[in-house]
Length: 308
Image (cartoon, rainbow, N blue to C red; front, side, top):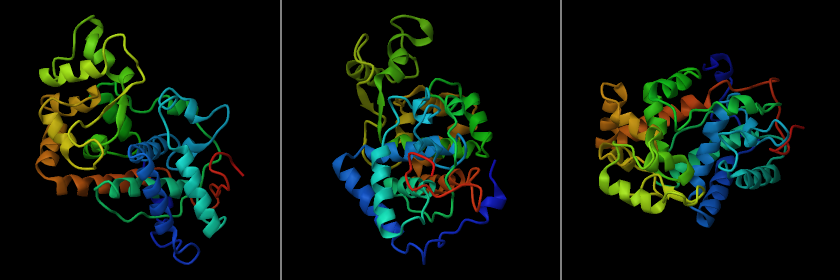
C-alpha cells in the first residue's frame, strides 16, 4: 500500500541546500562500480526491489544481524552490491555528513544503474528515513521465480502495485545473471519428471541453456537473463519472451499465460521501447514510495549496515 501521507513529505529537491551534489556523487560511484563489474547494475536494482517489498523502502535489506534479510531464502548467496552501497554512503557522508539516508541512496543507485546502462532517467522524490529493524521472515516471502503468475500478481498488489507494474518491473531482467540452481528443474526435471523440460522453452534455446546448466552441474554457475543484450537496459527481454526465450519460468509465464492481461503488455513493450521505458520509470517511482518512513519515523544511519 502506498503511504500517501509520507509520500507527500518527499521531494526531489529536499537535499538541494544540504547536499547539493548528491546526484553527481551517486552517479560517479555507480559508474565506477559498473566499470569494475557491469552486472552490478542488476544487483543494485535488485537490492532496491528486495528492500521495498519487505518493510517498505527503508534500507532494512542492508542491515546486518541475526534477523538480517541478507540471510533470507530470497537473498542468501544471491543478493549482492552491499559493498558498493557502503562506498556510495562513505562518499556522501564525506560531502554532507548525517544528511542523506541509506534508503535514499539505494533508490538513487537503482536509478543510476538503469540510466548508465541505456535505460530511462526519472526524478526521484527524496527524504526517506532508514528503518530500525530488519524482517527476515517477510524477506523469505518475496515474489519467487517458482511461483504461478497469480501468486506473483497478488504479492505486487499487496504493496500497491498493479499488473502493469508486474510486467514493467520484470523488465529489469533485461540485464543481469541468474544462477543455474534457479532454472535447473525447468531444464531437466520439469514438474518432477526427470529428463523433461518446460515445453514453453524454444527448442534451440533449450539446448543452449542445457549446455550452460548441465544436469548435475554447478548450481551456482550463472547464465544471462537476456542472451541478446545482457548488459544493456533495453526492451529485448520482452522480445525474448515473445520468442519463448525467457530464462526464468516466472518471466516466460508473463507471455505464455493465455488470456492473461500480461500478454498484451509484453507485446506492447516489445514493440515500443519508449513505452516500456515510460512505464518502467512510472513503476519504479511507485515502488520507491512503498511504505516510506519520514520525519521522526526512522533515522539517518551513519553506517548502512547497522542502526545508530
